[in-house]
Length: 318
Image 1 (cartoon, rainbow, N blue to C red):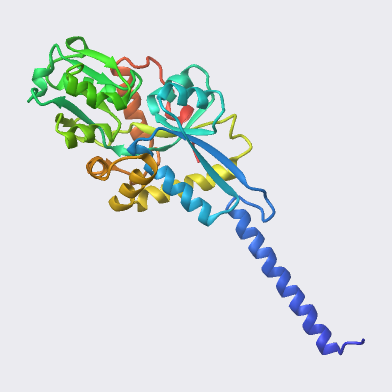
Image 2: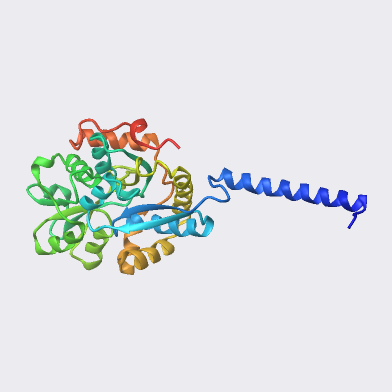
């Protein structure tokens, strides 16, 4: 069948237009880090069931809805030691973890990189009801989750504020979930740990807040999202997409939404979760040089690490 010249020109123009549109769509997708035919990439991220992990769940959900090329698999662990072992060995791509623990591992040559914050502030120092003032802590036993933690630093900051040091108390490491019961039984006299375990003592009446992190160290940082650079070497586009989704999730989280995530995904009761979220901020979870270097100074001052990695050595630059 012979086409009229006008019809032929119209068909040629239509084909050219469709080609331009297809090219534009391809490059728009490619700008986001994904080719149109790229297969799905899975990022495995470890976490402990604590309030500070809340943004991970919203970020994972948003990413599933917005980009089918990236899947985030969240892997629950029961303690910091086993979580860090999985991160250090590359069995998971990344983890929500105490930054000081990751700094220590980095100092030992483990290929880790701090990418994002888990939260800002949000830690409290809890004491038994018979301790009315920090000045009464001398000679007492105080629990922390790990020597390599902002909780250790906060306790030492409080002691220093009242003319004491770590030598004036007994610092013990204890599993976070055991701390409220330990306080109730008299095994310990106080503690500082990730939420919701501070809120749990308040809600059950076995203890009270002796100091909040923002009173001792404004805009303090504690948990972070850390990736193993060897495990993620071939997943850079997926990492970029995850970071964008995570920052957005933190900025948009409401207290009600965060509570629902904590109840549904972290096994918390609603009252305890709401109390925790009175202290925690998830806004602006990027890692600034100022905040990191402040943490680094505290780590050195309070004897956690003599030579922790600098910002440029440890924090992701993109």
